[in-house]
Image (tube, rainbow, N blue to C red; front, side, top):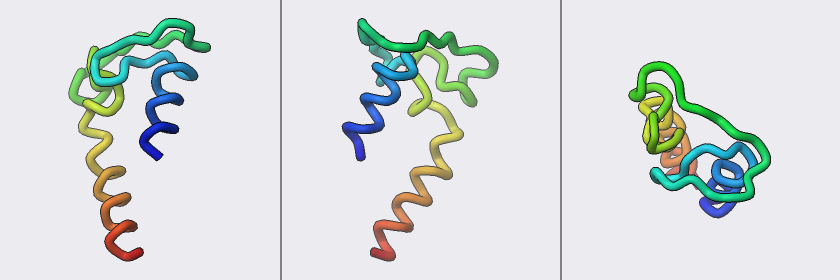
Length: 64
């Protein structure tokens, strides 16, 4: 799951992954708006919007 997330984020969407931008991505994105919501230069994984997703995944793994 982590590898798929990193690939999609870095090479498909072209967003930064932990602050690093990869070469050869399909799309190009530019963060806009509040960095707390967009992740800013860190990328989507640095946004507060990831907290509910991470909690949901943790709960799913706990149930499993």
